[in-house]
Image (cartoon, rainbow, N blue to C red; front, side, top):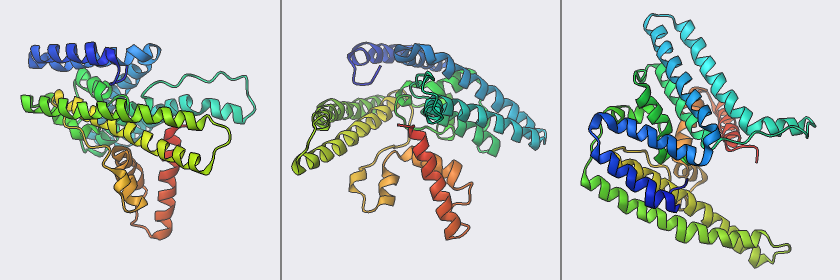
Length: 318
C-alpha cells in the first residue's frame, strides 16, 4: 500500500485517524502498532514475520545489553552489540546481495530471495537504537508495544525518513495533539500527493517512453536526462512530505529528509539536502566513529571512501 493509492486515501487513513482520536491515550500506541502491521502486511504479508523477529530480538538484546552495562560487564555488553550488528547486517546482506554473490560465483541456478519491502529502513532504525543504548545515549525501551510501534510506524516505513529513537523517545510515551497539527499535516500531505500524482508519475511516464527508445537524438537524450532528474526529485520530495505530515497528524515530529537539493551550491551541500536522515545515520554511526576528519587528510579520505561505499551497498546490487 502506498500513500497515493485509493485504498490508503479512502479507507486506511480515514479509519485510522477516526479510531486514533476516539481511543483513550493509553490505547493509541497499540492502535498504531496494529494498523502499521496491517499496512505492511497489505503488500508484504510473507515477510512480516521477519520484521517482527527483528523487532523482538533487538528489543530483548537491548534490555540485556543495558543490564550488562549497569552491572559493569562491558565485555558482555560489547558481545551483545556485535551479535545484534551481525544478525541485522547479515540479514540485510542476505536479502540484498546473496543472489548477486552467487551469480558472481557462477551459481546461476541459485534462486534469489525476494527483497522484503522496507528492510533497509527498519534495519537501520533498529541498529541506531541498539547502538545508542550501548553508548548510553538512550535508555532501553521497556514496552515492547512502544518499541515495535517505533520500528513499524507506517508513515516512515516505506521510504523514510530514518527516524532515530533518540529523536522520538519522549514522543512514544507522550505526544501533543491539536487541530493545528492536523491542519498542517493535511495541508502538506496534499502538496506531497500533488507532487507524486501530478508531477512525479507523469514525468516518469515521459522518462519511460524515452528510455525505451533505441537511437536517441541529442535533444532526446537531454530531455530524458531532465525527465529522470525531475521524476526522482518530485517522487522523493513527495514521499518525504507525506511521511512527515502523516507523523504530525498522529503527534510525531519527524526530522526533515529532503530540502531543495537542486538549489545546492556544491556536491557536499547537495548530499546534505538529499535523503538527509540517511546521510546523518552514516555520519553518526560510521564516519565519526572511524575518526571523521580528526586524524589527517589521508584518514579522512579513507573514511569518506568507506562511508560512500557503504551508502552504495545500502542501495542494493542493482
